[in-house]
Length: 470
Image (tube, rainbow, N blue to C red; front, side, top):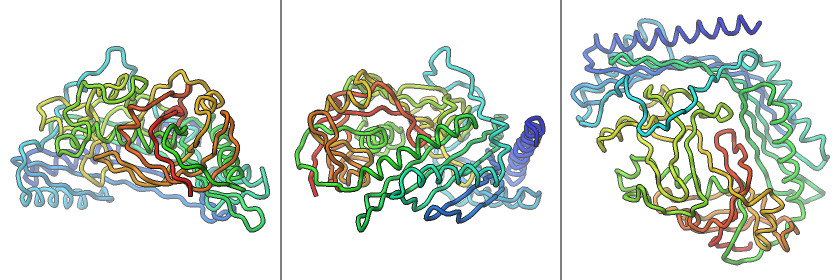
């Protein structure tokens, strides 16, 4: 199919989703709903799955889902359907209205107004990102199989000791629309490729520790480089995990790779900056808006305008416009994230952070977490700054979302002496508190990396971590 035909088909599919959402809102009104909002998505996926290095499954799936949220005197009702015929839409409207009649009223329930920009939107922000890539959207199952096979081959051909337990590559396209009874209409199309792998190295009777990689691209021209980068990371870490020795127990600085930095520090902070967590007493940042709680080196933005991140979008789950904004600025809690419900509770404007899909009511979350890099230099310079201690590439464990306390295992970790990696180490226990670590940042790398396709973070050198050797 040509790019022109692909665009024409995409426009037709998007228009159909828009029409169904508008129709469902009208049916909800006829069923007695005071207010109604319909959020629909049509998704097409073409995927390849490999197990033990061999093709296991090629799969094509297509489907549409529409969720209907209705309000009646502050009472909420919700229903969804994966069918778009008139009878199914009528039934969904009746179900949502019936459920609303059974729920207790809440004065914070209601629709977002169609006018009004997100609170505190910076001046000069770029236009909503163009997420549609016709050449990406046109890829079929055979193309997914071909790219997936090349991904697996690069990992297995690099060294006979490398074993790929599983790998996947998925080509996706979606058409999303929202309509509500206040006249709000939103629609956008997206196309992407996501992929990942889990593997290890085996030498004789020794099986090294597992390592996993994941990424996401929209531009087809970036795919080969992204696949190569992930393949090289997996094989490099997997081979390094062979012959692992023991770490040393201490409390002090550790070097965190971007994914470990995200898990141990950044994600808990972003979660705690959600207004609902604050309102319900489940945030360590409650009452600290405008205060400095972390190192001045730490600045975190939510950026839905970056088309290289999976969460890029022009509007949120409630159809509100979105914009890049600082959550943390030089260690200070700059803003909370709000969806419509949380905004009404506090009497403020939504920040466009409603999240979720058509099968549930809107939640709350960031679109694309970006941590500003620092002046710590490249990997070699960050290792030199660590001097002696543990380099954690990945964290597997638990982080308490309220207190920030964490405990778990450092995966793919290395021991550093004299600023150089001397050996890989067996799974080592690390523990601490996310908010204490946030105030103990010694340096951030000078380059932010895309992490799992959904965030951008640098390496981080952080003090006050408890390390217990196994």
